[in-house]
Length: 393
Ligand SMILES: Cc1ncc(COP(=O)(O)O)c(C=O)c1O
Image 1 (cartoon, rainbow, N blue to C red):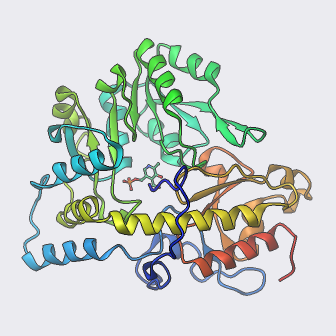
Image 2 (image 1 turned 45 degrees about the vertical axis):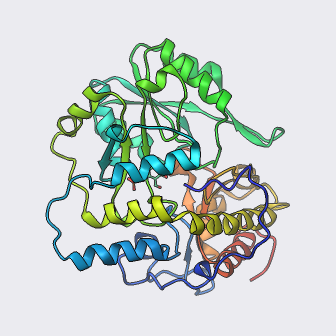
């Protein structure tokens, strides 16, 4: 995911690529179909701000790569293409100064699929997989689907420090439990947008090493434990190609790579050739577009912060990364009559469709996706203020 935090502000205007977006209705778009045919209390269409994909077209370099691949015309079974691992390795070296061996890279048909495989590869039935909560819903339900336990380590909302903090005692207690075998780290964290610091990552890695827990992460851990860690990355979120089903697992340990497909129990399909073509192009040529996107998302984050500031009973810790915006509505809810205290319902009645915090393990919270054209976001934020009672229709 893009990381808008900790970068100097960019003065240039965002490119036109983000102002005109195709209509996704009628294309099977999950995001838009959820509210199809429904209307809010004023008879308006509910604008979706939930699932984490963006409404923007992917950059030309990605579209051109897909066209080149379709011109080839043959779409048989395809394993990792010759340029896939090296395009990723070059990208990671350029962007993060992370040097990986291309031989560590394995294409996977999605990060969720990869996580599900690690549950079976590295934990036995009944053993535990820990994660910081609130968290992206599959972190909560995948362990159970694999017959493993979900171990929740709640993050602390430190409003006075303006960030989410790790509860180190709770983390250590979870990792010290001999049945905990894996820690699934979401970095940057979804839904809070937290970027864990190097110090936090090192301390987490130390604890994991000490208690024999493997960390499954999407960011480098420059630490001995990283030899055992598995890292998932994908071009999908940043370049808006999630529907192409292509991600990569970086697995330094050869034995784990060998056992991967078997651990999937027949449920790991091959990647489609267009996913490879698009990912390679995004990693190799997509950086100028990504920079423009970051510029836009910084503005959108600012707009969202301004919209929620001063809303009674509504709080938010500014995300440091991602296009996701996590809103704490618990005080607002406590002040409402019980039949009107559900923030998700209040939003939908006002014509805005966020993700419901309950799905992330946190009732009373909402997640807004800011990856849409600016005028649509402005209208959504106007409706958000309406939902929480500060402006009329
Ligand atoms: C943290 C995180 N991991 C994984 C995914 C989904 O990845 P994939 O589509 O590759 O399965 C998402 C999508 O929102 C996500 O936010």
